[in-house]
Image (cartoon, rainbow, N blue to C red; front, side):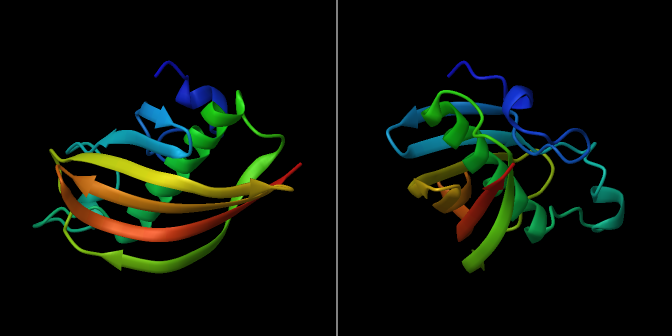
Length: 139
């Protein structure tokens, strides 16, 4: 898919966690994040065993949903999207340097500035994390 992630998300290094949108079919999407040894959080989480923090995996899912929503709607929605809720979050596998994080999901609803998404982060075909996310878009 040809969408400029930086054009639709307000995030920048070191807090941009989506490298590209791979596919969008209706409400279903997939983005990727290449997890490298150079991530700024690895020296502190953890020095002897680098693991991507679960909260940042959820943030990556949220950003992927924002990219997908923008692509689906033909451009970034008006205003900034703020994470408003996280439900049923589960972490099933560690994410480590060298992993390619596949950020997949389905946009359940988007109306009147409220968006709900069911999302999963996978490494290969193995689920690393999953959650139901809610966003509110504010001008």
